[in-house]
Length: 101
Image 1 (cartoon, helix red, strand yellow):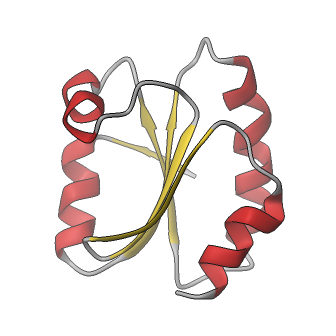
Image 2 (cartoon, rainbow, N blue to C red; image 1 turned 180 degrees about the vertical axis):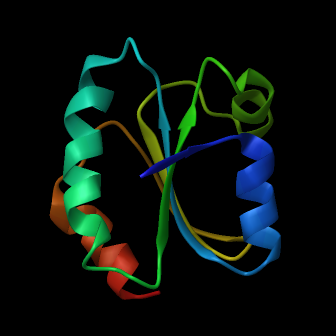
Image 3 (cartoon, rainbow, N blue to C red; image 1 turned 120 degrees about the horizontal axis):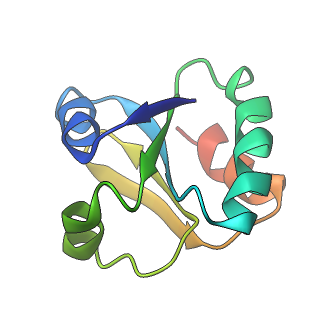
């Protein structure tokens, strides 16, 4: 999973990319457990770009999106938000949305 900025996410969305965006933080324990799980799913969905956005370095983006907790995972089809979930969810939760892309 590549670390990107909020502006990179917006650029990828405008290009119509299918995205899984993980809002994470270095100090967040649950985030540390989620990242390896998402990375293990990445190869199963070659049509989806998996990226991480650091919450502390992109506060304006989080505020504009109304995100108040990490981890938050958002799945996009271009600029269309397919799913947004806070906290760590079972892999089946993410896979159900990724499969529909």
